[in-house]
Each structure stands twice: as C-alpha cells, then as structure tokens.
Length: 383
Image (cartoon, rainbow, N blue to C red; front, side, top):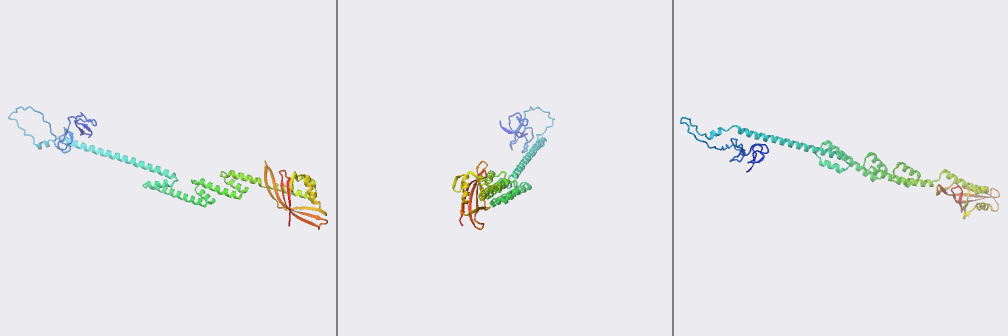
C-alpha cells in the first residue's frame, strides 16, 4: 500500500482506497503509475497526461480457434497504428486539469484581494482613530508621533495636526512669557487669549497671589474690599475678611471722633467756666488723673480749684488745638476704648486783660465705652 495523489483532485489517498475521501472518484485498481515520469493517472486513460507515454494494456488469455483458410488475415497493429488509435478522452482530461488550476488561481487572487482590502481598511480605520485622538490631545509628543507614524495619511489630516501642534507650541511660549513676567496684565491677557488652556487655573492663582500681595501691602479696608470683590473664591478670601474686620474695629468713624472731641472740649470748657457739675459729668466715677490712680470726682474738682489758686489770677481760658490723634481697641463685645493725644494752650489772665500768661501742654486721655474720660495726663511743654 502506498500514499498517492488523487488524479482528480490532488488529495492524498491510499492506492488501496476504494474511493477518494475528498472527491469520491474510484481509486483501487483504477489508477496506474507512469514508468517514465512517475505520474499517477487513471488506468482508463490511453496515455500519461504528463509525458504522453501510452498506457500499457493488460493482456487477457484467449482461446485460439481455427479460422477458415479463406478468411483474410489481419496484420498485427504497428506502433503507429496504436498511436493513431488513441481515443480523444485524454486531451479532455488535461483540459479539465488546467481549468481546475485556473479556477484555483482566480479564487486565490480573490482571497488575496479581499485580505488586502480588509488590511487596508483596518489601517485606514486605525489612522482615523489616531487622528481623532491626536486632535483632542494637547500633548506635543502625541501630535508629533502621529506625524512621524502616518506619513502617508490624507494631507488634510496632516495639515490639521500640524496646525494644532503649532498652536500648542505658541500656547506654551505665551504661557512661559506670562509666568516669567509675573505681571497681572500679561497673565490676564493669556487667559483671555486661551480661555480653555490647561494653565488657566494656575494663571488665576498667580493673579490671586499678586492682588493679595498688593492688598496686604496697603493694609486698608478699601484694598481688602477690592480683593474680595475680584476674588470671590480667592485663596486669601477669609484672611482678607478677617483683616478688614480688624481694621474696621480700629477705624474711627466720624460719629466716634465727634463724640470724643466733644467730651474733651466740655471738660476744659467746664474748667474755664468753673462749672463743677458739668466737669464731673465728663469723667468716670474713678479715673486716672495726672499721676493719681482711682481718682474721684472730688479730685477732679480739686484739680480745677488748684489751677485758680494763684495770686492775682482772675481767669483761665483753655484753647485746644485740633490735632487729635485717636486710636481704638476692643475691650469687650462691641465695647471700645479710645486713646487720644492732643495739645492745648492755657491762658492765665491777671488783673486787666493785658496781663496774660500762656502755657503749652501736651495731653493724653482715654475715653471709656460710655463716652466719658477715664484717664487724663498733662505735660507742660517747656519752650
């Protein structure tokens, strides 16, 4: 037993198999092997389809009978006669094989064409996906990688990627310039030019820092108000509100200033008029008077009387300068104490109006939350 190729379909099959398992043609005792070229073909064919050697026919034993002497004797066939008697079936068999080869070749071409089409389509789809991904990216490396990888991509795709890449590079350059400048104007211009930039949040923080530094340097209520108005979500919003609140506590309103200057003025006018009741109404029950702690109303009246206890003194006139320096501090919940520095002139009149003596004083006072004087110190200015 040997393995041969089926003469019909070329499938490998045993030469003892009844039929070819692939095409069903009969095999056992139906095929032969050419002794010249080794081609396997059907025994019924008159010649080898490869080298055209005539097929050797098997001889059957025959019974010889006597023929009449008068019967014509047919000469044995010559070699040429055998060749001329080849049936026309063999050429048909060869034509059939070539047709099979041609069909197989056409099918192979079609398969290759389909495979190439599918491959090309897959490549085009991949290029399109990479193009769309790169157009959404802001990474210079991603865009440059597309240009390096897809050099045969549609020109409009390459042009779009190149323009996008140039824009990102310009964006990066403008950002670097704005950062180096540390200028609020340049940072704001960058944000206006690139509203969707990945650096927008960082630019906003830098502007916030610049504005906060300016507000802190000025340290005024107006400066903190301006910062809060421009940076509602600023990093220093809470700090600005706290500083503004502290400044408001220290800020002297017009009403407070008027109340302070009025009580001090009433104190000295009371001395001018020698009005004890008005004088004591301007001070607290206990106060620091000159160098005396816990002085009382009686001590205040005694101070006034001492001022007038001079020989020949007829009148005293206190004139206060409008150079008040006022500070404020919180000593309780909405309770404030005011410290005041000011100067004044004491004019002492003796006898007639022409006989006068003037003295300059530097004075400090504290005003309690109830609006009365809780401390008074006076120092004579020596000229």
